[in-house]
Image (cartoon, rainbow, N blue to C red; front, side, top):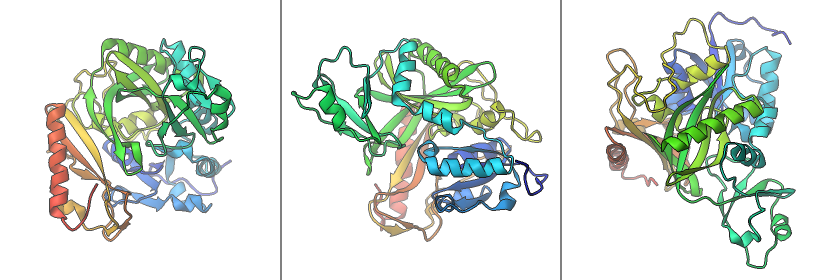
Length: 423
């Protein structure tokens, strides 16, 4: 449908999601102007461009027409794929004004988030698929006589960041029909895979799929033992894992038509890697790759370009490579390794100016230097106990050095605000 308002001369990218700050910063590094909507409206996000609260979509309100008229494309970050009503509402409004989507549409999202489909595609790539049980279907159980032969994780079908994920006990006498009867229609069981969380970021372009890089995940939040706490990297898994992951990425794209950025979460155990989830979008671990050597500094720019939707006036600052670990970045001032750590509230409090604990700066070329703190709540925001407060970073010449640097950032925050309990 043709837009009822004139498109402005300025190009803006609309980014929607739960917390969009990292993706917005990536887009800004790529020279894109922004309109954003998320749950938090953090101070550093609002400094990047116009923002409006995601609650306006929850309430069914229309997005500001003037802001929509300035958008050349829209995209989303997590957990957008798990919010079907809002996803549909925004998609419909964007269609009304002729704003194209740089991302997977709703049918593709549904396909990608089907846990049975992931394991089927994993089997095609040569992985031993994990058993999956939903209320209406079981897969991958031929070699498992009884549920008690394996350990199980229960996951919501619509959840992100490990929210609601927990171990699921089974009894020795239980049979498959009994197990399925204990599963509600909005959750599923996945066979437990023990080891180190290891994720790969991929970019599907017109004729190829490229592995951008790998990061290790860290878990354990007030929401549960499997909640996403942060990432560190880049890391280089064995060549056999990278080859198998590349094949899986190609199968995913072939099977779903997915384009742009996407992440595959998995569990590494020695020289084995077991895929457990697909995230069809820019993910939280992307900025660790963008801000370290060997990677283009704007994956959001690359994502939008893969759909042919980027602003022609913005020059690309990313350099593609088929080798996830090769050093192609020209900014040798960037660190080799990084770590991000999400801080949670140990008590209810009113947010002070958290930036007071850290110094920030820029390189001589104007590119922002590696951050110490991000996702900064606006002064006076009420933070509830157990809720995320901010993200802290550490950087160094090794993973261990980055971890120590990140711990110094945590200590600096706690020492600067001793009256606040941080988790």
